[in-house]
Image (tube, rainbow, N blue to C red):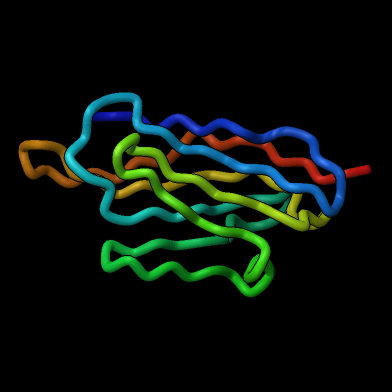
Length: 120
Protein backbone atom coordinates (compact mmCIF):
# COMPACT_ATOMS: atom_id res chain seq x y z
CA UNK A 1 0.00 0.00 0.00
CA UNK A 2 1.26 3.47 -0.86
CA UNK A 3 1.74 5.78 2.10
CA UNK A 4 0.91 9.46 2.26
CA UNK A 5 3.46 11.49 4.19
CA UNK A 6 2.48 14.71 5.91
CA UNK A 7 4.71 17.75 6.28
CA UNK A 8 4.49 21.46 6.96
CA UNK A 9 3.50 21.70 10.60
CA UNK A 10 5.21 23.77 13.25
CA UNK A 11 4.85 26.92 15.30
CA UNK A 12 3.16 30.01 13.90
CA UNK A 13 1.97 33.27 15.44
CA UNK A 14 -1.71 34.16 15.60
CA UNK A 15 -2.79 35.67 12.31
CA UNK A 16 -0.11 33.81 10.43
CA UNK A 17 -0.35 31.24 7.66
CA UNK A 18 0.84 27.70 7.17
CA UNK A 19 0.49 25.08 4.46
CA UNK A 20 0.29 21.39 5.22
CA UNK A 21 1.15 18.81 2.58
CA UNK A 22 0.19 15.16 2.25
CA UNK A 23 2.18 13.46 -0.50
CA UNK A 24 2.02 9.96 -1.94
CA UNK A 25 5.21 7.98 -1.35
CA UNK A 26 4.72 5.91 -4.49
CA UNK A 27 2.85 5.62 -7.74
CA UNK A 28 -0.94 5.68 -7.66
CA UNK A 29 -3.63 5.95 -10.29
CA UNK A 30 -5.72 8.69 -8.75
CA UNK A 31 -6.79 10.38 -5.54
CA UNK A 32 -10.55 10.10 -5.21
CA UNK A 33 -11.38 11.88 -1.98
CA UNK A 34 -9.46 13.73 0.69
CA UNK A 35 -10.28 14.71 4.25
CA UNK A 36 -8.28 16.77 6.69
CA UNK A 37 -8.93 16.17 10.38
CA UNK A 38 -7.48 17.68 13.50
CA UNK A 39 -7.32 16.66 17.13
CA UNK A 40 -6.54 19.05 19.94
CA UNK A 41 -5.41 17.81 23.37
CA UNK A 42 -8.34 16.43 25.34
CA UNK A 43 -10.74 16.78 22.42
CA UNK A 44 -12.22 14.45 19.86
CA UNK A 45 -10.87 14.34 16.34
CA UNK A 46 -12.86 16.69 14.13
CA UNK A 47 -13.28 16.97 10.40
CA UNK A 48 -11.84 20.24 9.12
CA UNK A 49 -12.16 19.94 5.35
CA UNK A 50 -13.44 17.31 2.95
CA UNK A 51 -13.10 17.04 -0.82
CA UNK A 52 -15.26 14.47 -2.59
CA UNK A 53 -14.55 12.62 -5.80
CA UNK A 54 -17.16 14.80 -7.44
CA UNK A 55 -15.10 17.91 -6.80
CA UNK A 56 -17.10 19.35 -3.92
CA UNK A 57 -15.18 20.67 -0.94
CA UNK A 58 -16.78 21.38 2.42
CA UNK A 59 -15.31 23.03 5.48
CA UNK A 60 -16.08 23.11 9.17
CA UNK A 61 -17.69 26.36 10.19
CA UNK A 62 -14.74 27.12 12.45
CA UNK A 63 -12.32 27.29 9.50
CA UNK A 64 -14.56 28.40 6.64
CA UNK A 65 -13.03 31.34 4.80
CA UNK A 66 -9.60 30.74 6.36
CA UNK A 67 -8.61 27.24 5.24
CA UNK A 68 -8.42 25.93 1.70
CA UNK A 69 -8.03 22.33 0.62
CA UNK A 70 -6.20 21.84 -2.67
CA UNK A 71 -4.75 18.97 -4.63
CA UNK A 72 -2.01 18.55 -7.21
CA UNK A 73 -3.04 15.55 -9.26
CA UNK A 74 0.23 15.46 -11.17
CA UNK A 75 2.23 15.20 -7.95
CA UNK A 76 -0.36 13.10 -6.07
CA UNK A 77 -0.21 15.60 -3.26
CA UNK A 78 -2.93 17.30 -1.29
CA UNK A 79 -2.62 20.49 0.68
CA UNK A 80 -4.33 22.38 3.45
CA UNK A 81 -3.63 26.10 3.24
CA UNK A 82 -4.37 27.73 6.58
CA UNK A 83 -4.60 31.51 6.89
CA UNK A 84 -5.50 33.86 9.73
CA UNK A 85 -4.57 31.18 12.21
CA UNK A 86 -5.92 31.33 15.73
CA UNK A 87 -4.69 29.71 18.96
CA UNK A 88 -7.74 27.45 18.86
CA UNK A 89 -6.44 25.98 15.60
CA UNK A 90 -3.65 24.33 17.59
CA UNK A 91 -3.92 20.58 17.05
CA UNK A 92 -2.42 17.58 15.36
CA UNK A 93 -3.62 17.57 11.76
CA UNK A 94 -4.22 14.38 9.79
CA UNK A 95 -4.94 13.79 6.13
CA UNK A 96 -7.10 10.88 5.05
CA UNK A 97 -6.84 9.93 1.42
CA UNK A 98 -8.99 7.56 -0.62
CA UNK A 99 -7.10 6.54 -3.73
CA UNK A 100 -6.88 3.87 -6.36
CA UNK A 101 -3.96 1.96 -7.80
CA UNK A 102 -3.42 0.90 -11.40
CA UNK A 103 -5.08 -2.47 -10.74
CA UNK A 104 -8.31 -0.73 -9.87
CA UNK A 105 -8.01 -1.43 -6.17
CA UNK A 106 -9.29 1.25 -3.79
CA UNK A 107 -7.42 2.16 -0.64
CA UNK A 108 -7.79 4.47 2.31
CA UNK A 109 -4.75 5.84 4.09
CA UNK A 110 -4.33 8.06 7.13
CA UNK A 111 -1.30 10.31 7.33
CA UNK A 112 0.91 10.15 10.40
CA UNK A 113 -0.23 13.53 11.68
CA UNK A 114 1.60 16.83 11.96
CA UNK A 115 1.54 19.23 14.89
CA UNK A 116 0.36 22.79 14.32
CA UNK A 117 0.85 25.20 17.20
CA UNK A 118 -0.53 28.74 17.02
CA UNK A 119 1.00 30.87 19.74
CA UNK A 120 2.74 34.16 20.31
